[in-house]
Length: 356
Ligand SMILES: NC(=O)c1ccc[n+]([C@@H]2O[C@H](COP(=O)([O-])OP(=O)(O)OC[C@H]3O[C@@H](n4cnc5c(N)ncnc54)[C@H](O)[C@@H]3O)[C@@H](O)[C@H]2O)c1
Image (cartoon, rainbow, N blue to C red; front, side, top):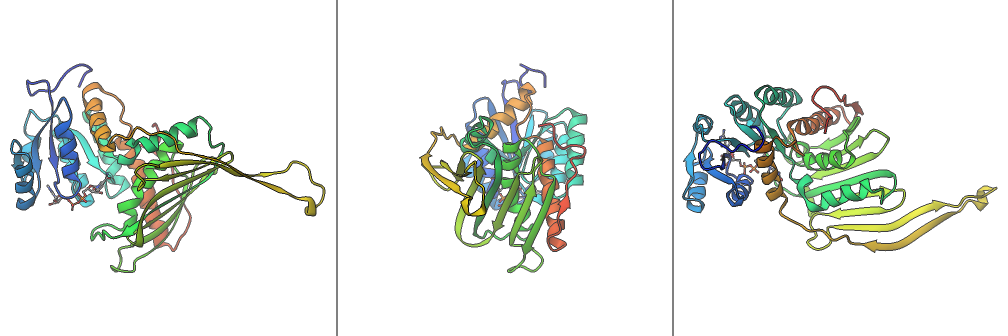
């Protein structure tokens, strides 16, 4: 839609339908419902129980089991999809073909081929395809990127991310598809690039054939190594990313309410002159620990508002379909690597990737 033009509902509002009202969809619905300029007209789910729950919370909504009702409604500008991953492609495709802007939850699709096809279709239809990489809208992740860009940490040696807890076991996807998109999207965002290789070890202990524990190693251009541990089989809930740089180190703990980021002025310097191995000396630096101030707004609120801005004003999404495709490519390759017992596999930055 050209800049400055409003939607077609005659009230100057951006009108949407939310498809999938299970665990995550209601969070999207709540945020759009509170967003000035937006109007949620539909909730859609296959479950009567979920629909009546949503109607009890928001009596003004039109409830439907058929996404087709939303697609054929001329008043609707955008569709927000939070259904199981296996349904993303078909629902996303139908909405784009029906001329709607689409916000599709992560992971964008269950294969890179499907993601590529949606990116292409969105381009053809000149509609926004937006992926729900929610963490890149968090103030903590934005602060990390700001510190990286400012060179606060120096050269990044490596990054390590742990995203583990007990459950929730999924029946249709493994833990890599379920949890790793968060870490991969954060890292691609922080480094403004995509990994060039991936190596994965994974095991399925509880449900045969569905990996519940995985260890991924990604290499980014320039040599930065990223380690991601994801698990549904851990006694503790941990959401922690550690960045180790040549100047400083940073720990991002998403479970902390007050100190999400800590920057450690810690490091090791090699003393400049030595003649023999015996004289080889390292100097350990233990400086201040700084907790940067973060003005936390609900990341989903920013994400929803940004989607509306992209649809109405042609702003480039911070989490575009191409960014969704880039993450799906890594997850797909990571699963292949795991099936091969941890073989390192290259990732080609082919069509649709990059350009962030
Ligand atoms: N961005 C995030 O932080 C985040 C967090 C959690 C989940 N998610 C994503 O959100 C999506 C949904 O996850 P969830 O945990 O809410 O799943 P869920 O199973 O709790 O809910 C999915 C809902 O979709 C409905 N549904 C299934 N097929 C449908 C169809 N064809 N039409 C209409 N409704 C249909 C189901 O009845 C169910 O109520 C997944 O892609 C998941 O990865 C994202």
